[in-house]
Length: 282
Image 1 (cartoon, rainbow, N blue to C red):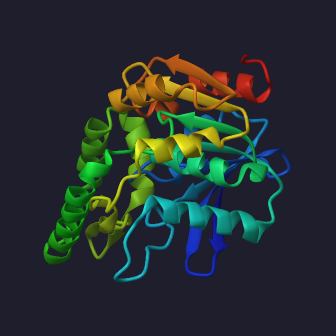
Image 2 (cartoon, rainbow, N blue to C red; image 1 turned 90 degrees about the vertical axis):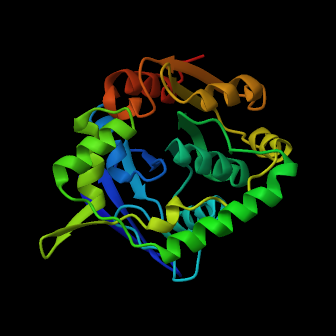
């Protein structure tokens, strides 16, 4: 495991290199408010691959957006493509969990020549809303930003209590929560601080429509593996039931587990991923 750093035109992305760099690469994108450590458990069982796990902008050790800027999912797609172009990577395997799966689906749709195979864990395409919700969505977004600007940041009181809270909030084991928390907090002068940009917690300014989501998903050309937890988010299962015909070459698997099943049960999840990458899941 090694720390990675990639300087782009407007910020620096950091992450973890997991495994042997001489092996085929998996570019891995974590979920909302998680970080690159999300893929450490899986890396122990995907030993035929080199995982480049990125701290998505504003998360983990990666730079925050500039003052006055906000976080939009489509801008994460820009960041990832600039990263890919800057490294001149040949076509690769793309893997994402939750929000990372959404970003991965956008990316595979827009840049199909770059993605050989797509793995989406507890995610199946972009989040959408009815067009009529747009005015209220924008209002709530603006109000949430102004509220964040005027309120004081909350800091962790201790490492132990932060791990316990993260474990409960995410329905994950304390071991999994520890990996995420250790990469997301730092101690300075006896006080703990979150590294994650607090602006990530504000409400999104817009949601795409279901018709737009369909257009993106139908443009995914590569084989796609979708892994859901049987105790995962119901919204993921609903999206899958409505959208499963949109990706021509998709393979749907349900495993035991909650939303972070790739961390809590990496053996089962990695077995399906290895089978998919070797063409053994039909």
